[in-house]
Image: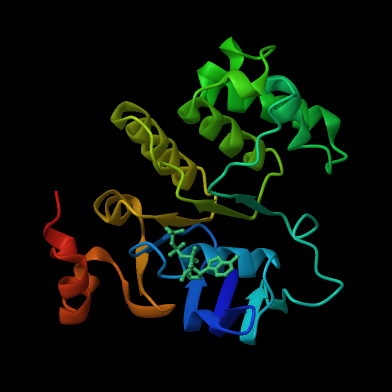
Amino acid sequence: MLLDIDNAYVQYGTSVMAVQGASLTVREGELVSLIGQNGAGKSTLLKAVMGLVPLHSGTIRFDGSPTGGRSFSTVRNRISYVPEERGIFTKLTVGENLRLGGVARKDRKAVAEDVERELERFPVLRKYWGRGAGLLSGGEQQQLAIARALLLRPRLLLLDEPTLGLAPIIVDLIFDALVRLREEGVTILLVEQNAVRALEVSDRSYVMQAPGRVLGCGTAAELGELPAVVDYLGFVPSEAR
Ligand SMILES: Nc1ncnc2c1ncn2[C@@H]1O[C@H](COP(=O)(O)OP(=O)(O)OP(=O)(O)O)[C@@H](O)[C@H]1O
């Protein structure tokens, strides 16, 4: 098991318990999605994996080791995270942003090859290589954020709502890229509000319901057998689309 979240609780301040006993696993090579409505606790769970919010209780293990300890480093363990707000440095160029993804690596030649591969994956980044990243559209910035995250050669890629607010043609482009990444063997945990598309591309999905509980998990076919999940989603996962 690459990622193993067991009975995680996360609290903001003293009142809001945003995640309440969530368990989730990701195996090497899987594309797993986390779906559910606004405020269900999906983003919080990703932040907990990155150590950006502390666990109240429960455990998160990466490759068998707890993620919470001082000695754990997401960079050393090669976990890449693309937050909902993307984290692009708007004052830097596209090329500078992209190269930043590889700064922690020592294999400079391989980094250069990986930059080239990302430019082939997302041609718009080549086109705008020298342009200030702040001038890119939302969809272009999202491609840059994903490409930059891939430059770490992540063992696990965490994506928070990569298609939120983007034009349908860009949504298609991002989902196509996810399918290809999965074929390349990149392990992905995807938070997505577009449940239909997420179910379509994922090996397995977790359905999360506020406040912070996992309602069910499995393949689209398995989720379709769970009445509470079908009720919550408002459609039968295996019959979507
Ligand atoms: N920094 C914060 N301080 C206090 N409460 C927060 C904070 N961030 C999130 N919450 C609350 O925690 C709960 C879970 O939020 P979270 O963002 O994880 O949900 P989500 O499923 O990712 O939804 P969304 O798609 O809207 O991001 C919500 O009730 C939210 O209001």
